[in-house]
Length: 447
Image (cartoon, rainbow, N blue to C red):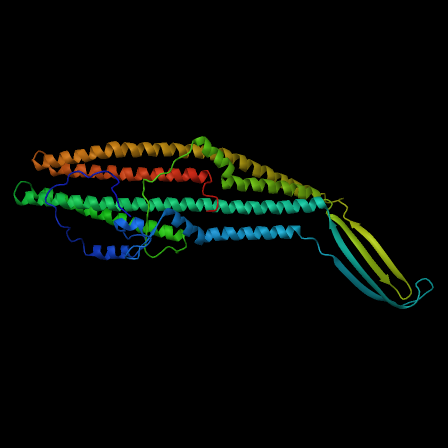
């Protein structure tokens, strides 16, 4: 992957390029440890056209990361199994009750003129519950809506997971850009120090200027090390989402300033109300609560027990057919109905509140996108160029002895801060765009 400049051309550096000086003894060991972490291998310029580089580093796009995470994330796997549980519950709700078979026996021990002969008495019976069709239908519908809610919950997990992967991926790109900027700033400071050293040795400047330059270099090295450690943290966070299944060596083929066309706010609102998985989960829950109300009403008369039995005495056989019905005198399911109705009202209030909140979140994210775009444009076209020009002026003034080294170091510090602000503005733009897509439910469908 080609590492092109993010912040525009550098200002003219001072002459006398100096070789890199030896860092502290711990620096080589720290860099070796960092290079052993995934994602820290800088690819050669042609890596973007290769799947695997010569050193074994695998080049991945953001979509490749998303696919890997979707295949291996434990939370998503658990959400998929919850659908199997809900599907089994539908089968359970639709099962017919089993018949009951009864056998009993005894003995007619005292014969008489009325009871007949003495002997064994046997009774065989079968009972079958014929359910109330309304109760059965409501129970099945409730299970079906629960299954639908589980599917929407899976879409919600997928939507949030893809959002996290994309956000972490752009954070990884941000940390890489910060590390690259810190390394380039360190080179510039070292060149400045060599220029100061020459002037100190020739008596044109005091030794105090060299001490200041050394202090700035120490700070620059610390910033570079911190940026590289943050790259490692971002890579580990991505690997954690993928349950540790990312390649040992990988490189991300993307740019921090990559953006896709953005639809209008009205289109996003329509998509959000229609596709947002959280809204669809609440809608399925609302339908389930309505089915529970119907189920509570129909459970007043759960069904009819059809009984058939035969009693055999020594000289008599009796065939009996009967019906058994539960009479709702004491328990009329008022509590169950009231509970289901309250649950429905609560779910309806949550649904309406979430819809209103979703519209406000979309508008807020839309404004964040506009603000980030304005910041990116202002920094890239104005502040960065002005800071570079100011640094060139300070360098020229120092070269001719009109300004001190403080002006040059301050100008370099301002340029670093402006470039850092530009990187953060680009990351904020990506973050706001991801939030818009997440609220609109664009990551909820199967890839």
